[in-house]
Length: 141
Length: 175
Image 1 (cartoon, rainbow over the protein chains, first blue to last red):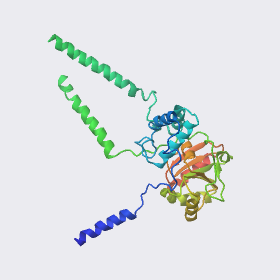
Image 2: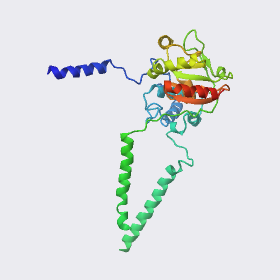
Image 3: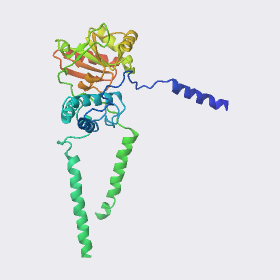
Image 4: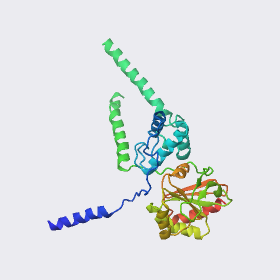
């Protein structure tokens, strides 16, 4: 009993004492990181934009979902700019200019991404063609 | 032909399985390079991050001399690891300017006291606004800016001893 408890306790102690490698700053979050804008229409614009901007730290999440400090600062930046009257798509373009298309969850339509938009339509046409062929054959039988 | 075609869905399924499995087993860790490389430094003016030391504005960076802009923070662990390399570069005469992300003066003072001060000036960026304007996605990152204020190169992560010669020669090219 005593023999196995010892390393377990030691391990728990080590976990308690260790600090995570991904440190955060000691500063409080920016004002508009988690505070909504007073104007509901502007807050809605900001929210829609934040949901389609990718967090640079937790890369699968949008900045609206992420708890990373940098995502908070990006939310604050977006809310402040929308409050100042800037259009959401202008802010998206500003971010893409810095981080590339990667930062946006709304891929643009260009010569690299057109299959994303064209393939679903193509598959739909293909599906209709196959189903109509089968139906015709069944009617004949 | 038909007999072969019957295996097509299974073949596609296995292909998908392999693609997803490799993605799950070894997910790609992505560093996002800044698209600002090759463009002028975005305009900014930051107050001093450390009392008694000047702040930093983008205008000062276009002074005809290439320099390094180090995006760092006192709470960032790899920033401690690159401190000796920054000191070495500063001793070789390279002008290094710091941008301290989300930092408090007292923490910064402790960091500088412990790790040395290679910086000519330190701008405090309390809400990461300049970091975002630079297209930087974390700390530490180092930007090489030429004398005209054009960003020539971005180094993501800590500057390790083996990175120093490359940075020195890039600084020479940016002259």
